[in-house]
Image (cartoon, rainbow, N blue to C red; front, top):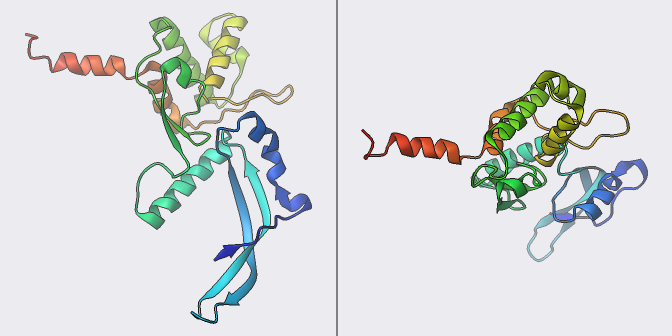
Length: 218
């Protein structure tokens, strides 16, 4: 099968939605959904092979960090596994191991990046890490990225609540606000345990496991 190089015009072409994102975040991947039909069918007279040419009749684009792109990536992964029988990262995904501080700048399972966290956030105190986890729990459970809610529920000042919201944005829990609206929560409630684990880092659990199996302990 071949694909026509022409794109649809006017309101049938939604690629403009990610044009600015491609410039600002050129290293990440983004998703498009295309509707196709058959433009032509040709026959190779030597081999008898029948070759259809698909034509894109409509296309929509989704920034890689959006909740819609996350859902589409899951559907894509399922289709890829069914087609190839391989259960692994998608061919266009990158696997990056980053320090906990830097990993917050990447989206967990978002924008085509799979992030592994080698340890806890060493620059933060345990109380600060707990506060970030509590903020993530509140925002994700309520599906509401409200600074006022964080300040009220956690009994902290607005400035501290704003810093927590910035941290959640860095960690890919919430998106960017549009106008006067609250920023969108771009993860699902089912993702909460993994997000909390990522914030805390695995080292504490590993240390506890090591202590439990230490033959020197009596």
